[in-house]
Length: 228
Image 1 (cartoon, rainbow, N blue to C red):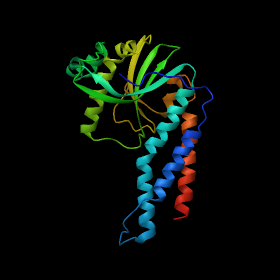
Image 2: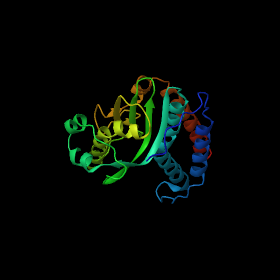
Image 3: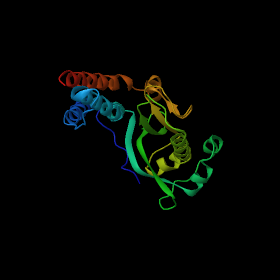
Image 4: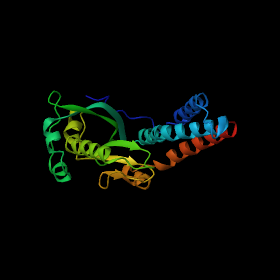
């Protein structure tokens, strides 16, 4: 079972997001690096910091995404680190037609593996239950990773409606998506969402808080690089 749905206060501030940015910048400032003999110590350090910032930016996007979702009064938001995939789902996960043509039972004991689901959202206005993974979406994944993504998405598409019932939720429809925030989608629609889709999809202001978090991250990163 998962952590279970909770509903946050509608006035949840972005303070935790900014604190996460501050903590990330502090870690980058302490980062050790090897000085490249061609460009020397300063540019080696700048390159190291920027490369690490790219890698950490996905988490910077995810924090305000979660804050925006949990602040919407009609959404219940949680995660499940061990979402259970049944043998039937794994067997049928070879193509999109099977994924959209089957609604399978989510069992407490009958499973072959687990998937970490970053975000689960129950929209109480529409009774839609969505399972989401969040990615930066500023680069493409290799073919092996794409196949793995699609297999997990197809399994998730078949199981969440029944899963929601185990959580005591009324679920009319269920969907699985990966959010490729900047639009470089390693899988196509209907699986992919981008920044332009978020507000309409969730029925709430989602992109603006993420952009505020991004702006603060850029500001703090610029200050760090200027001081290097």
